[in-house]
Length: 449
Image (cartoon, rainbow, N blue to C red):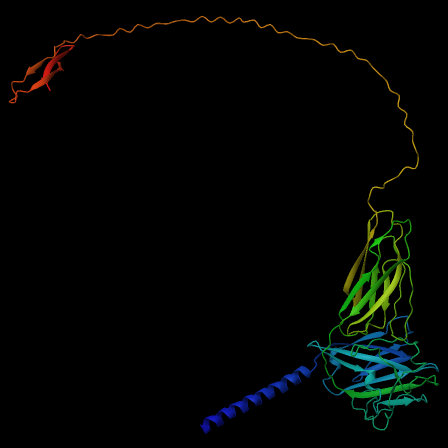
């Protein structure tokens, strides 16, 4: 009994050990990221160049808020390592005002996960910044390596700690921002102070750090769009001032890539405004182009996790007294070069296609002149006199058929005593026909009954 219990306990321990090893291996496999593609997106005042393991990507130049999208640059998947990636950047000022920058490197893994390297990784990170306020140039080489290459020794050179820009003028709505695909928030700028102010026209901020590919599960941007407006409109030679609204939602991850809304208006219709400008608080900017389609552009990307943006505007449908009786327009969402969702709105024109009914306002007086006309009517009586011309002449036809008569011989019936009878009873004698040979008439013979 003790032996059986001990053997079962060993089996249980073995199974637990296998399970732990499998779980550890699965977690390590799931936590690994094999790069499939990657891109860099950034914004800077005034210039920014980002390095990945010694390779430079840039420069990214200044983009005034509301005038365009942040710069996007593709990075080869082979540029990354599983661990120990050297990420470096240099942000250079060209005039005394502001020096600040923000960037995101989005790495897509073969299993669909994503890994990110961002400027936020440097915010508050000790010994990750070199501030060249004297404009002396980049740090000197050592060991045969440049400051942005693996193998370069950063000790004693990179001693500063970057700061997020939270106040003006750096966070004053001048520089184009974008949404982080990692957390769905607007990417903050980093600098050597919280306002980004720089009195030097040649100051450069150098950043350097070591990071691993840490994959995380994300839901790609998933867009939907709806359009509201009047469903019935009146007939008019020029119908304008109709209120419409577009609502765009993203239930997936935020995106830093531009999002464009195209509203294909019906023939004869036109956009009636308003023409909104860039919003520095939310980073959302949408503009409308005249004609069709009307374009609403979000150059900073779009928030995620169920965020929605509503765009109200007016439209002029033009002449609604002519066909067609329905004015149809379709709006769509385009992201990453492809249409993601669309919506259709139909406005029915009241009374279109119906036969108009007119009520006369003039009064008419009808005058009747009676005319009597006497027309005599002759009545004729027709008398028919029948004449019978048929004569019936019966014809009687007689056919004589001779009948042959045979005269039989008669025998008198009489009662007699039957002498043959022993009891001497009287019997009735009746005639019987006999056929004589060769004779044509019957013969009779009396028999007794």
